[in-house]
Amino acid sequence: AKEVPVSKNHCCCPYLAIVRMPTHGLITRPGGQNYRGRGPSRKGGGQVSAASGKKRSDLEKAVLDEMLVDISGVKWDDIAGVQEAKRTLQEAVILPYQRPDLFGGLRAPPKGVLLFGPPGTGKTLLAKAVASESGFHFFSVSASSLTSKWVGEGEKIVRTLFSLAREMQPAVVFIDEVDSVLSRRGGSEHEASRRLKTEFMVQLDGAAAGGAGQEQEKILVMGATNLPHELDDAVLRRLPRRVYVPLPDAEARAALLDRLFPTNRSNSSVAVSLSTADRREIVRRTEGYSCSDIKALCQEAAMAPIRDVPDLSRVSANSIRSVRKGDVIAAMATVVPSVSQDTLDNFAQWDRAQRG
Image 1 (tube, rainbow, N blue to C red):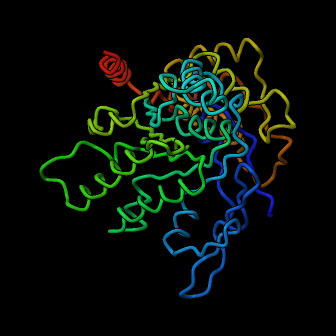
Image 2: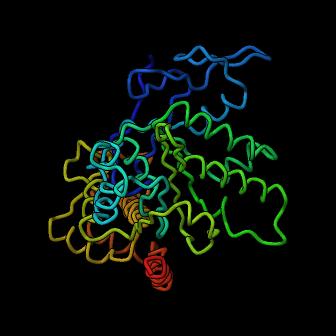
């Protein structure tokens, strides 16, 4: 099988941890079985699974190619901060699948989990870490993939997605921006949208069901949203475990700053001159920033030494000065927090309402 390149640069910021399935080759599932991703196929013919010899339909090939994501490089310890969210997911999802003998009956894990919170806080990365630590395959679907690539085929795509998840279980089906797919139903809604939502509901029910005398399916449905109040009530019932993913705390901001501006020059192409006191001050002043905000802030600060050079064509890379604390502070005039206090208050209010 072809080696899968995996990024090692993970943290709470989702933009620093993008891991994708290879364009060609095999993805190995727990137990050593392989499933082939995108590959050449003859016109009119289906792709063949490396594990079962089953001939794949064009729709199955498309779903595997677009939605099956390699997450083998994502580790739980790579995620800084969000300790409460990590503890909840560890207790509710990871441990029950690692020790099924201890988590049966009333302790059975939920079949649906909703991650909600401000944008840019690492909800997608948390979902990937859950799948990776549990040894699950990871299918990722978004509203944009359903609407832009397969217009009018939404119901078939959803059925095929869950069929493949059952075949390749244990599996996580992750719905990014779930509010865009499963928002509240209204009278003016397009018929195709209603049918798509109905099919999702049917499949969510199927993933949660465990028939008498049948082995419980190992399929976990996870959704992520920045707009939890927009979700249909029927969807919320099918995602009973809700986990709030807040803005990064001081510990997470410090870890992110160290990864973006490492103290060891060999780990970065950008020279940095930040003392421990400088880093502490930056961490303090970035309270209210999301992970993506902090990345944008550091990118803006990293440009300051470049802008100081009148003619870049005549200087060597080693002669560019280091990034200093003043560059980061100056960048704060341009890069401001993207999440308002009102938005944070709304998340807290919704969370309290769900807890009763």
